[in-house]
Length: 165
Image (cartoon, rainbow, N blue to C red; front, side, top):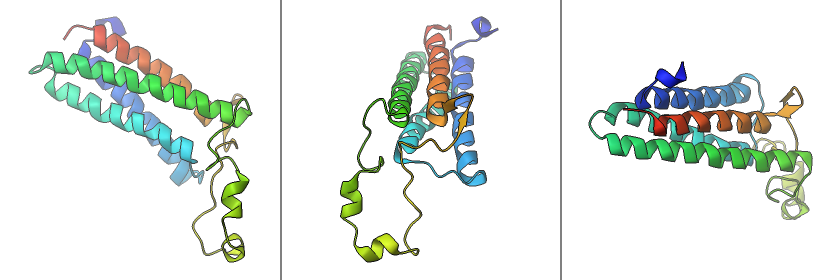
């Protein structure tokens, strides 16, 4: 089925995949009450860029085919980069390596707060730690699932880059 699709259709498919992934992330956040950590937010940006890039490709493919093909390579790169971020995040969650101290419970951040700030319930929502798994399915965290989704979307973007216009 995918072998019959041209560059704009494959790009649209990849862009819709990123848009659906973002919609899922926002659903977990706003409907499920699972606030994202900093690394979760990092993983949203490439999806947003890929979804917007796909829309742009669909619009300009007929009038600027070389630009459209180049943008598919950027979409593929964004998904590969995002898969790397997701793998890094997964490793932090599983304790394979250290994550950023700003979101992995580093004592330096807590020590910089005053007693009033530590005990206040009027401050911003609690910091979501990057090394804690908020939700998992089949033994994989949201970061792990995002990494797998990004690899699948990378393959679609790569297929789009090689497809006819």
